[in-house]
Image (cartoon, rainbow, N blue to C red; front, side, top):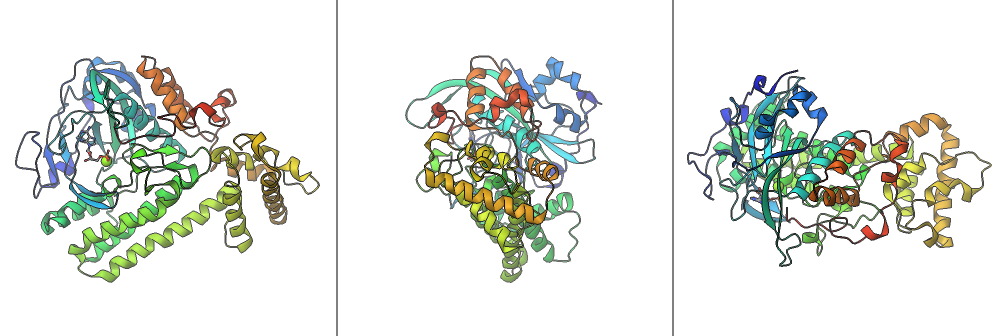
Amino acid sequence: MATIDDLRFDNRFTRSLPADSINGTNSRQVQQACFSRVKPLIVDHPRLVAHSAEMFELLGINSAEIQRPDFVEVLAGNRILPGMDTHAACYGGHQFGNWAGQLGDGRAIGLGEVIDTSGRHQMLQLKGAGPTPYSRTADGLAVLRSSIREFLCSEAMHHLGVPTTRALSLVTTGEDVVRDMLYDGNPRPEPGAIVCRVAPSFVRFGNFEIFASRGDRQTLQRLADFTIATEFPHIEDPDSGRYVSLLKEVGERTADMVVEWLRVGFVHGVMNTDNMSILGLTIDYGPYGWLDNYDPNWTPNTTDAQHRRYRYGRQPHIAQWNVVQLANALYPLVEEVEPLQEAVRHYADRFEAKWSEMMASKLGIFSLNDSRDRNLADEALSVLQVVETDMTKFWRELGRVDCSADLDPLERVEPLLGAIYPRESATRPQVSAFVDFGQRWAARHRELGTDDVERRMSMDAVNPKYVLRNYLAQLAIDRAEQGDASMVEELLDLMRRPYDEQAERNKFSLLRPDWARTKVGCSQLSCSS
Ligand code: AMP
Ligand code: MG
């Protein structure tokens, strides 16, 4: 295990791609360049709030290093290590369906690429470390509440098995940042914070779109060739076929990611093309949320409340729309529509196949190939909507439903009824829907002859007991803003093993309390962060 002074950087991104020729953070349109060199701001009193032990291990950094005050200076951007090449990337994007032009890393500064213990390059990036040429009128800073959300959720998603960017550390800067949290004319000072994010690449769909939109074929091709060489080195097709293969693989990874979101009840909240990772990683944790009661129309993002473009159930469709935008961006390198269309269709096929696999696994069966099993999946999703029902609890408890033939039907579904908000509110017909589903599910398992213990174990491995419920994250934030970060630590630790019972922490698996139903931060979030 290394000390921070032993860290070796191999900065492929900034070494291989064209840089902005202008220095400084003046807001500007950056032409024919993939990034601009920029330094993080110096902050007053950086203080470590939390770190991810797993990320230290992955990067091969000795965990004792976290005690070093000069390491915290690195994680806050005050100290630049030899070998780092600090920069902000240039990208564009479609926001809420409209082309928004140049966006770029407005408050993210890449530090450099470390080679992790498995030999993979990992870009370190500080989010909230000050302005860049892409900050437009904003300040380049981030506040504690949104940084806690990003830090915790990155690590939670990883342990849930969802592809994601990671988080190494969370520091407070000791400086206040003014934010109007709900955009309602009530700005207030909030503690500033910086998350150190980590991913093999932070390239987004929007990195390609910006060059295509400007007709800058040369930079577009350099970025595409670089991405293939570094992240998809197995793509060996000659000529333009390589870009089609790139699109196909990105589509595949995107489909796989969205299936995982649906499995655990995650709503990203801002699926703009600048927030879509070329690696199919969940990226840019903003006004995301977790379904408590299963409502496919729900979005946590108040900025999107009217059209609900990015609601839970629409995520597969939006991801495809985004893949189409990437296809458009790659078109100048391919100049043929049909192969790109084919790659987009591949997204849909991949999504369907993976979704079926995922749903089957949640139900404890092998596939949905049999139409009876397909119907069972549909029925589960409709029962979840008969009355307000907690998604996480429902699926977890399904693994505990007894399949024996001679059981009283109502007694059988008792564990599932505990997922209703609240149990007493369920009417007879609603309870009947649960009973009917329970009867059919149990009968099917008797027919398939699944083993009780094996079934429960396999279901428990895909139906988490714990997710980062919105209200839990908010409680951790409320306390951290008062100077007590212990709940951040506790949730981080809880989410290390989301599929384990952790009986002593049962309270974190309970249904969302009623007070949190409409509370800001628990059910409603804006993009202000
Ligand atoms: P987001 O909706 O968070 O993905 O951000 C969209 C764009 O706005 C990106 O280019 C961000 O870098 C930029 N941005 C968001 N917040 C800030 C901020 N506080 N300062 C500078 N740029 C920001
Ligand atoms: Mg973003």
